[in-house]
Every structure is written in structure tokens, then in C-alpha cells.
Length: 445
Ligand code: ADP
Image 1 (cartoon, rainbow, N blue to C red):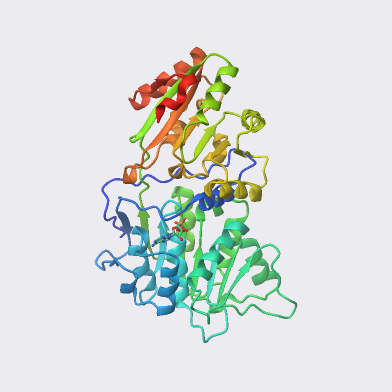
Image 2: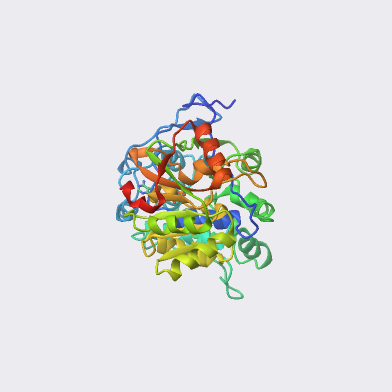
């Protein structure tokens, strides 16, 4: 019987990948999250453990040295700037490295160190003297797969005897050749082709199989079936792991169909709070006043800021006007290609533009922790109603309150109906939003 441990209440998962805007897929959102992430997210929550044999306790490590890794691997990890294992790594790594190999299902929000954990576990199980594939990682998109290739290569930088190759769109295996690399990282479609159609990839020698971003896989047409077909080719002895940022019923069912006798780890997402956020509003009575308020906000000396608009048309309009007036702004909308979005986010992250203008759907890809001013050019409103969308408000400006990081939020309030929306938000969160004078916004700092 499975037995939960380490947490009294049910974990609150990350909001499921939102695919309501056809122009952004779950895979693209996940990639945007990765691009914006500068480092690991540490959590105060405990990892909850479920396993089939509760009498056999899992141990955790507080250092990478305690894992008894190849010294080349340790060198790689240190060079990546890792000093201590993250929460999920503390428990998952000893389990993943134990003999005999254990299967695992692990859920924690993106940025908590899952990719690094399975990359390390896989690298340490490779026998470099055997020139055939021993590890396979499935990722939902080409971009995510290539990110994982980067991670594995960086970590394995000093393990020069271990070879890695990608299996994504554009990769080819010459006729008559077979894949001999130790680690293959690819998308389900390409891997199915290589295994079943071209028969250039033999999975019978695999020791470790990873299915990453299971929730995004499920949200992507066809990926679940392809993953199951690949899974059928794996030997009984292969260690199986599945990772996911969310854990709804669909993910649970899929996970248990693929992973037999797993140890299940779950790290509850930290709650977002409005503590440490200075919330303000500016009252305007015309589009022109709104624009003047926004222009004045440019004079506030903050690190980076995000401006939220209700519609794509508004965002484009605001961006053009600000640019015409000589301001540097970046614009993120569904009209950009996934590659362009990643480019915009990377430039923003690096500070090339201080202000990012966007709409809601795209903003879910972004980790607001790195932004110190959020401006609601349009207040969030429930679709097709005049009611406030409090969840979106929290998501736009809230942060996980860790390390006492502070932030500022300015709401542009245009007329009575906006004022009502704002009062609704104040009541909902039991907060007071302070009034600012739009002509003198620089008084806030
Ligand atoms: P996830 O797969 O859960 O999204 P990643 O493994 O990609 O998380 O880790 C998120 C970021 O944190 C990456 O930039 C990664 O290099 C870094 N990271 C991972 N583990 C550690 C660690 N133990 N110490 C410092 N940084 C880490």
C-alpha cells in the first residue's frame, strides 16, 4: 500500500499549462518559462513521498559529494555553479542512483531542478566502454529537447567518453547507419521514426528512460500514444522516470501506465502572496491621461517592468506609441513565432529592454520574480464580464514571497467601472491599494 509522508495537506500544483490561446502551446509556454529562469527555485515546502514499501526509508543527501559520483561529473556540476542539491534533488538523486535501480515519478514546478536531477542520474549510469545507447530522454518539443541536450552536455563536459545526440526535426541518420551514442534526447515523433520506421535506434540496450514534461506531452496531440509505443520497446530492466510540473488526474493515469512500482515525489508549489508588494493606482479619465501616466512611469528608476494589456491590439498600440516617443520597449504577443518570443524574452532578461509589454496568456510563461514593477495598463477582468479576475491579478503581480523580495504594482484605473474592479480586488485580498497622482508618479521612489 502506498503511504504519503512528509506533508499533512494535499499539494497545490502549478496551474496547468494553458492552451486557451491557439497561438501559444503548452510546450511553448514551458520553453518561455525556462528561458526566463536565471537559477533554481528553492522551496520552503517539504517533498512528499509516496512509495510501495514504506518500511524501506529513502534517504536524502545534503551535498553532491555524498552521492559518490565520478569526479568528472562533480567537476561539471561545480562548473555550472551548483553548490548544493535542491529540495527535489536531495531526495531524488540517492533514490535514482541506488542499486537496484528504482523507478520514479516526480512532480514539482519548473525551475526546481528536475532536469538537472535526471541528467545527472542518467550520466552516472552510462558505461562508456559500451558503444550503444543506454539512456533515452523524451521531451515534448524540439526546443525543450535541445535545452536538455545543453544541460546534459554541460554536466558531462568532463566525461569526454560519454556521447550525446539529439533526435529532433532535422536530425538524420544515414542509410545503413545505426545510432551508437550513449544518450539520445528527442521528441516522441522522431524517436518513434528512428525506432520503428528506420530501425536505426535499438532501445533494447537502454538502462535509463526519462519522460520529461509529462503534462506538456499530454497536452500535445499524439505525444502520449507515441510515448507509449516507445515505452513498449524498452527492456524490463530499464529504469523509468517521469517528470511533470503539474499532477492532475490525466498526468497521474499516464504516469502510472508507464512507470511500474514507482517512488513518487511531489514538491508543493509555494503560494503566491501579495506581501511585500507595494500596490498603487493612478486614476485617469481618458485614454490620453492613461498614456500620460504610462509615460511618467518610465521616469521611475526600476530594474525591469512588465506592462499588461487586455488585448493584443492594445499591447501593439501602446508599444508603438511608446516607441514613437523615443522609449525602448519590448513587445510579446501571440503574433510572434515561438523563436521570436524566446528572443524577446532573452533580451528582456538580459536588460536590453527594461519594459516588456504583453497580454495575459503569454505572461503565464514568465517568472515575475525577476521583475520589480508590474503595471496593469488594463485591469484584469473575467472574460466577457465586468467582474475582476482576481486570480490573474495575483498571478501578474504576486510572488512567492521568498527571501522577502519586494515589488511594486501600479494599476491604471480609467473611470468608474475600473474603479469598481479595483475595489473588488481590494475586497477579495483584503488589501488597500494606494492612490498616486499620475502627473507625479515619480514620487513612489
Ligand atoms: P526544472 O527541470 O525543474 O525546470 P532545472 O533542472 O532546469 O529545473 O533547473 C532550473 C535552473 O536551476 C537551471 O538553470 C539549472 O541549471 C539550475 N539548477 C539546477 N539545480 C541546481 C542546483 N543544485 N544548484 C544551483 N542551480 C541549479
